[in-house]
Structures are given as structure tokens and as C-alpha cells.
Length: 65
Image: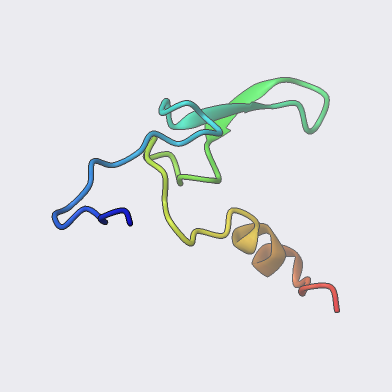
């Protein structure tokens, strides 16, 4: 039987940007830095965060059925 931590845990670094808060995108043909969509540029793992929600909202798309 394992015990769960009783107090607050240390924040985990974002795996996508390795805690830096930015990623390099090649969309548009030229590499450029942008805020990491997985952590919103914070550099910390965000539990239950949907990195694609912003893009679906902007394009008017929806979830596939």
C-alpha cells in the first residue's frame, strides 16, 4: 500500500518546453519562438490543460465525433 503525499507538491516543469516557457514553431516556413501552448508560457506543467483549445476556438472547429 502506498501513501499519497499529504501536503502540496512541487510544481513540475513542462515537458514540452522543458520548463523554458517557449517552443520553436516552423509553421509558415520560418522557425520562430512562441509561448508554449502546453503551459501557456509559464514553464510549469498545468494539470488538465488543453493545449489545443485555443486553436479550436479561433478556427471555429469542434471535437471530432
